Structures are given as C-alpha cells and as structure tokens.
Length: 417
Image (cartoon, rainbow, N blue to C red):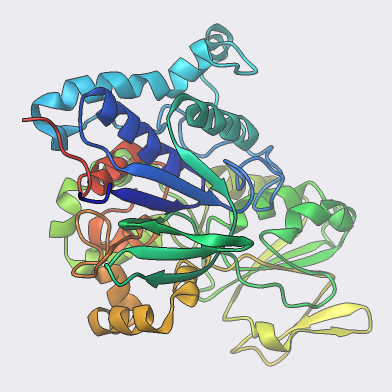
C-alpha cells in the first residue's frame, strides 16, 4: 500500500494557513489531498501578534486585508473545478471572518469606517480563526535537524520529541533575523520591541539596514526620540539612498499576477526588486520622517557590525568607507533577514546534494521553479521566501497567497476524473 502523502510546513504564518485553507477547499471539491503538518516553535501568527518580536502588534497591515489567504481567488490551475474551489475558499476570507468570526469589530462598522487596514494583532487573530476552520495537524516545536530517509522522504528532528516528522514535501515559510551582537544597547528586529522604553528620550540612534524590516522600527523611534533638532537618527545603507516604496498599478500588478514576470529580462527583474522591495521605506514612514522634529541622515556604506564596541557610554559603529565611526546611544540591526537559515539545519548529505544543483547563493534563487520549489531536487523543497526573482515578487509576502497555495499543492493534489 502506498504511503499517504504528507506536506510539512515550517512556520505557522499566512503562507502556512493559506496552504492549509486551500487543501481544505480542494478536499471539499473531492480532490485527493495530502496531510498537512505545520511545525511552529511558538504559536499561530507569532510574528504578527506582538508577543514574539518583529513588531509590538500595533502597526497597521501594509497590504489590504482583502489580500487574505485565498487572494486573488483565481484557482485556474484546477480547470473546471476552479469556481467550486474559489467558492469554498471564500469561507476563509477576511470578509467571512468579519461576518462570521469573533472579530473585535463588526463587518458593518469596518465598512462604515472606510475599510481601514487592520493592525498586525488583528491580522494574527484572523489567521488563528482560519486555523480553527480547517483540518490541520499543528505541532508546537522547533526543528533542530533536517535529513532524508532511505525512502527519499524528509525527516525532521524536533527538539524534545524522540519521533521525527516524516513527509514528502517541505515548505519553509519564514526568514530569521541576524543574531544579536551581545553588545549593550544594540538590538535586532526581535528584541527591539521588548525594549522600546529604553529609547524614550534618547538623542542619537543608528539603524543598520534600509529595507521594510527597518520601516516599523523607524516609525516607532520617531515617537520615542527626544523631539529636538539635536536628536539624530542615522540610517546606514550600502547605497546611501533610501526610497519610498512604490505602490502604483504597474508595480502591484506583478505582485498579484506574475504571468509576465519570468519573461522579463533578469536585469529588469533585479532593478524592480531593488526599487520597490529592497532598500525602501513604507510611504507613510517616509512622510513621517519629513515631519519629524529630529535630524535624519542616511549614511552610505556598510557597518562593520563585528567591531562595534562600547566606548565611554556610547556605541562606536565603524562604517566601511568612513574615516571615523559613528558615536550613538543605541544601534538597531535591521539588515535583511536570513532567508537561507534552513540550510544550517540540513544534514551534511543533504547540503552536498543541494550544492550539486545550486552552486551559489544567487543560483539558489534562480533555481526556484513554477511550484516554488528547488528545481530537480528531491524530495520537494518549497522556498516561497526565495521565489521573488524567478517566479514573482508577490510570493515572499501577502500579495498572492491563494496563487502560492495553488502552485505548491499542485505537486500533491489530484482532482477526480
């Protein structure tokens, strides 16, 4: 008898819930669906609810909530069953949650107020509601080692559990932050939010990194730093330029419908990602900086993080290309997340097999195929966080969760007939 298929997902955020919801919709449409196991070391929506870093939960969602776990509700891959599957997916939509769930605000009130973007805490509550509606195997625990069985299936050792998880496909859904430097008054994107009060009334703060991770941190700092021109906020970026994220139709259409994306020139795709996804602040944060009563400066270069030191009550931050280090009260590490952290968990044999296919960090992103997995690698390794260059800029974030789930589940599901 053939072993039932199982898909293992690391992380219990929007991508995991979108896959689980689409599996439930396919099951309702009489499709053969794999078992779904979600492994998460804390709780569902942990990086959104303000209890586990990345945020205090009070920032607004930066995408419309209608871009929910089923968006864009165009399940074209499933042929004639498309309408039926999309109809089932509407049961897990943001609107259904506002009408049928235990949302803190009624659907009527939300519409009357102009459909404001919810806070991240509210979004995490929506994700928990979706999880309650679908049949998933949620396991709390942390993956400590990932290998492959003799039968060619994934084997994931979980801390404190003598029985490993075994599955046919693995989905890695989230990044990790750089480790703290271990220097006083130096924080990363996780521990910053647990220490906000330390920044109240501070004069000089330096933020390393100029991407979307930095945006909520910068926004929070503007309400904490002493509101006088003598207060300085430094933002270190390699280019020395920090742009406001574009939100025009020509940008967003590639996030929602990436049909044309793979046909674009590689140089054009890199430029697009650099301009709208990396090295940019959210528009509302850029506007807030204009109004702030502090001195804001961008610094071109790369901070030598390993040589930051405490000197007479100040942090000295050496910057490549600058003769003198910056002297600041606090240092925040908001550099790009480590999106390849999972490789550190792979057994040596798995790393060697991966290296025979992927020879460099760049080519790992180039190797992501239509199903958001590493091409020609078995068992299936789905990496939506690395799919922006090869498949479309919307896959690492919330712009096309329904399409993401279609592409991944197409490897495992079969409709009758």
